[in-house]
Image (cartoon, rainbow, N blue to C red; front, top):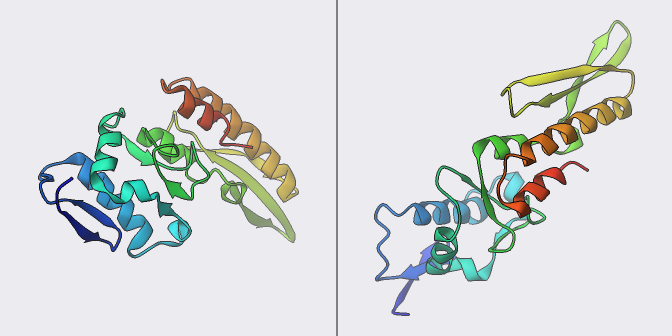
Length: 177
């Protein structure tokens, strides 16, 4: 490869000859590097990009081999969420991505006081209606968590049926413990 320039957030580089004007792969690549190496939000503090993808051309080859149009880059479904790379990334619809945000139990609901008693309300985002479902009020956090897990798993199974990529479909089904 010809002379390379380096400097996209201190890690990314590309060939000088590579035309990036209007290139969707370049936009995704820069956004990915930005999440990991520039103004890192807490959710990305332990996230890195594999060395292979520090080179734009390597990412670009992978990118154009995927079903990417109108989709979002995800690193959590196929991996543990700590690295962007060809084996851990896929493209998913906004619907799938939004559903997976907040899969952890800590995002299941909230507490409220009823008189002098604390009540746990379980709720879940429904990817089919776009709204939040209230699953009920529970006396303990554990009971609310069970209700949340059961419904989240049901929704994950239904959502996975809409996904053509078998690896991603399986990942969505398994996203809720």
